[in-house]
Length: 221
Image (cartoon, rainbow, N blue to C red; front, top):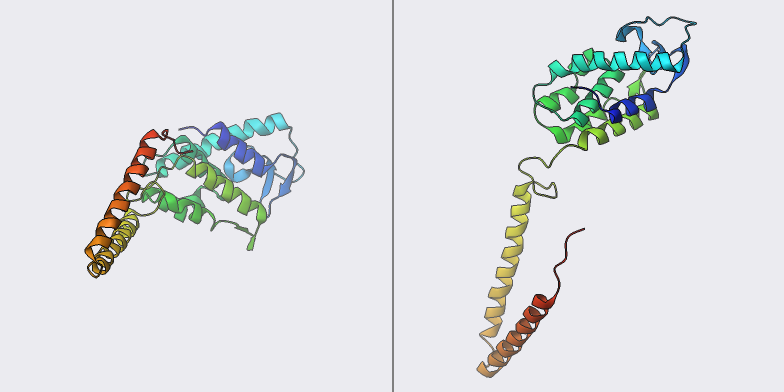
């Protein structure tokens, strides 16, 4: 599987282009779009310079290499967007760190909705939290979740079905309780009052149904 254009754009945006070799916050010599010697050739050394076209070629080779390394680590199929987000993450932290990360564990366990939380754990470099890494993890999480359907066992709103069922039963219980309470009160009223109330209720129900049938159907936005 290949990284999508959105995935490449994400990597370019957060790595940024640097023509001259520099030390990243972790102290690793870096050049171009986040290329390091650990990613493969060319080796990065102090004083090295490259052009942006060359940096794009190196990036394409690096991303393809990381994609080849990430793919075999996945125990279940993922979408192109999810794969791209995972490759971006691995590109940033390195394949060894990706292999032992809770991000990969969550994916392989099928807990896709836990991936954003796991990504947010990886926002430190040199022992301190970096705002740039926080923004990158958020962007990777957004890309990953763009292809995640509601989890099994959850309703359309993402709320666990057990909670939705419990809420429906609670509402039904409240209605039933109201009916029982009304019946108890009704037993204390004179018969003519009950008959009058039933007649008014029937007229109100008929009016509502007549209005509802004439009302045009509306979709949900």
